[in-house]
Image (cartoon, rainbow, N blue to C red; front, side, top):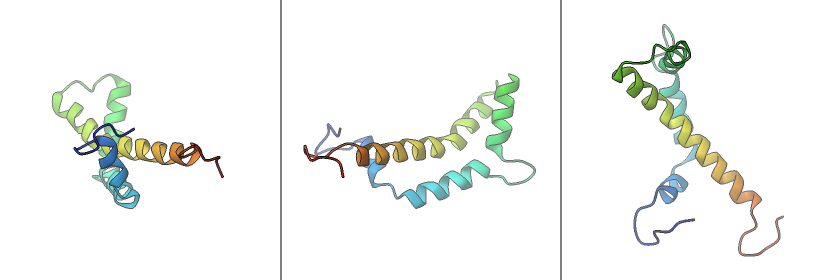
Amino acid sequence: MDTHSDGWSFTRFLDRLPVGALLALTVLLGLAPFLPEPHLWEKLKMLAAGTLNRPIDIFDLCLHTAPLLLLAVKVGRMTSRKAAPQDGAPPP
């Protein structure tokens, strides 16, 4: 729920983000650079191998993962809003 009716809130910001723009950002940052391998894949392999220990690598993992997490939260919110009845009305 939105507790800040007159101020800034993360949920309001997330609800107003266009899905297409967020999807494009997710693909671009998730796969960039495209060659020799995407950074996200490289950092996840480093994490699995236990070699993700430099601060710049941790920051890079967070940077390339953030749009994916935002997209997952937005899709989850959209799905739960469609499933939950609004204003006491029965679901369609």
